[in-house]
Length: 558
Ligand code: ARG
Image 1 (spheres, rainbow, N blue to C red):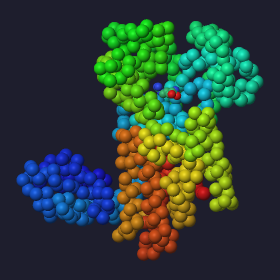
Image 2 (cartoon, helix red, strand yellow; image 1 turned 180 degrees about the vertical axis):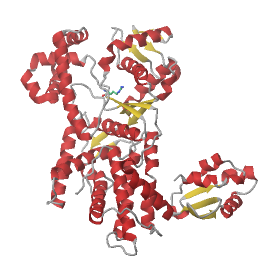
Image 3 (spheres, rainbow, N blue to C red; image 1 turned 90 degrees about the horizontal axis):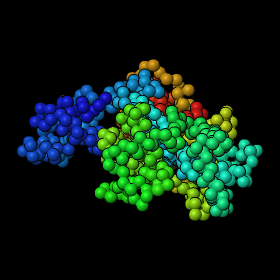
Image 4 (tube, rainbow, N blue to C red; image 1 turned 135 degrees about the vertical axis):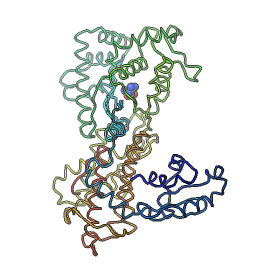
């Protein structure tokens, strides 16, 4: 039920338009002030009356009964109280009949969103810094699908550049097949690290030659490169499976090797390309930015050149309505430059490009700091969380069946939720104890609430019919929060903020637990039992939908 609409439709005879009233209605921070409020200050001028008088006027004429049970004028505001019984009837029916689709919409029907996320670099293992893009991008992918969009998940692989020449050179000098087969990506990374600390002038020269060989299609160089790529993809695939994320395309930077020339030609044609110290650039000084480098003086293309080609390719291939880049804020300038260049090229769709920036992740002991030379691999963080979850479960519920499966859901959930819970632009300090706390603002807390609700409905069943009647304040809070889920999902999509869904889940879990501890469910009297069971089932469904959107599993028992 759209209450704003309901209220606004009943208020148009006051000389103010429907749209103005609809837009002005807000949800007061404190529900003691009603469920919706209309501030009348804006209308004073047009109506030539004081806001206090206008509010009183509106309140006295509003038809109560139906969806709105009470109206009150207070200091220039009209406060509306929702009929909770009617709302409960409607919401329970909606949640229980829509099931796993509750909260979805067709808002995005016919529209396409490309989401560039995770975008790993070949031969580099995932460190904890890659967690956010993977978790946030993965959640946005699911959220946009839930809102009816056609979504294209793109892993813009970092598979182009001189570092691969270095890697081949290092392998040729120090590596062997067996060690790399066995050690996988970490063995490759070791070779790369060794090159950077030990390579002399001669090896640097060789490395440049190997890079040239990759570029010119040399068989051996390309076989090695493809092998490194295969090992990387196998490795990241394991992590993606754990984190429940998927991609529709792995077209990385190399894919654009033959797609850059047309973009360069177009830049030239449009008079945007300038020479500067032998390099080709687009001057962005008028826009307060350093130039966007397109070709180096040796003719080599750059990260930006490939991103321009990729943007054009995505528009041509998917005809997106929006193209998102879930990339750390360190690349703010890069994306501002790319978007500006596209705009200067006269692409009307430049305005549809969005850099979804996020902050840094570090561990409590500062372990991410590269200055100290300590790198934290993402798989270690995930495994440690699963392990810790396992020992907590062992303590709390030693007789639980399939403990391992539960530990995995809890551990992985904690990692994802830890990366998602805060507003994405904030830097986060990852703490194992915090993300795994049973009574914090955590996924474990939400999962535990789900298990609690499940055990109630397992015992009492989910009734087909029930009478709602007068609600207690705890019941009313749960009902109101259930009703707010579709809006939380829509806002998350609109603001590129999966944290809205995460926070919503914690909020609903808290409201439900208050209800659970204050009100009897299975032993309720006066015909309340069935309604409370239905309310419990609807909460479980909604929490499950919220966690699923974030890529987090829900154990039946904990
Ligand atoms: N591979 C890059 C990095 O690790 C991220 C790529 C992001 N996507 C893009 N289209 N530039 O920094």
